[in-house]
Image (cartoon, rainbow, N blue to C red; front, side, top):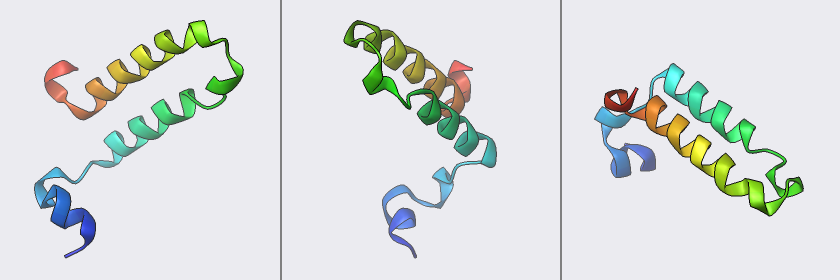
Length: 60
């Protein structure tokens, strides 16, 4: 059993779509350090909502 399986269990392995959605969210945050700090909260809120929809179908 891998460290991943020990901590998350076999039931929580992500689908390819979920992994892709998470990668897209992370990519959308690249370069954030070059944006004004005042814009960071909106970027994080959008990322959080996108992650919620990708990882929890009840919120999609």
